[in-house]
Length: 169
Image 1 (cartoon, rainbow, N blue to C red):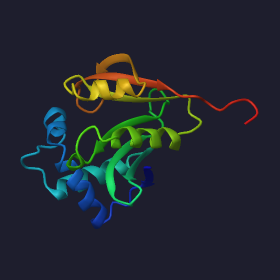
Image 2: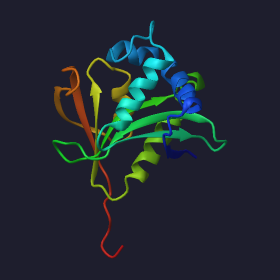
Image 3: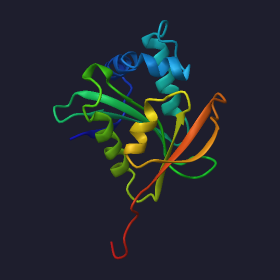
């Protein structure tokens, strides 16, 4: 079971999130958001704090049943253009091995956290081939192809329709 808590971004937590970031070298090579060869804990902390401080954003830390940090996500609770909640970034601790179910469990916890919304969106960089089948397997479907707002990178916009509140609930 995965639990999500809002990130504190104190020194201890930054150290844990830094280790997760460093475990995902290929993501940073694809995104260009950090240079995996030169990134520092300070540059990662600055990025995380800047993103967490943005209006309508929330960074959540994922912990397993033993309380160990296994990943984190950055959520945009209401996109300024379309009004939908977005998963802006999801990183799972690569030291735990691939295909262990952590990513799937974190996404399920995010979806539960966003109960009541009709859909969740996210962007997958076209160059991030490994991410596309993961999101597709979780029920996210391509709805658009456009340049991302941050850096103009070709991005596949994906959406998952969620079961909204039922009548009488």
